[in-house]
Image (tube, rainbow, N blue to C red; front, side, top):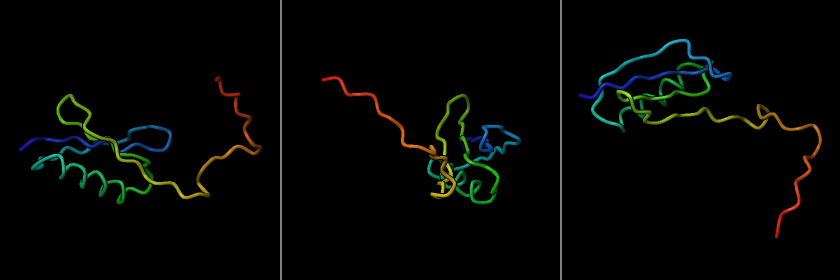
Length: 81
């Protein structure tokens, strides 16, 4: 069985722990990453590595009130024709 390493990260990108698991395949790794994200409310994402390859990163969805929007409308640069 392949081994996958999971790195939960806080919103500022800090990684405070990791978990290594032997799983049947990449689909199982994705499910495990989503479960870790659900279990650890302080993490914003979970990166999954297989040996020296980054397999995927799962992000927590933000609620509208969690989005940091500018106080004033942002001016857009004119488009070039």
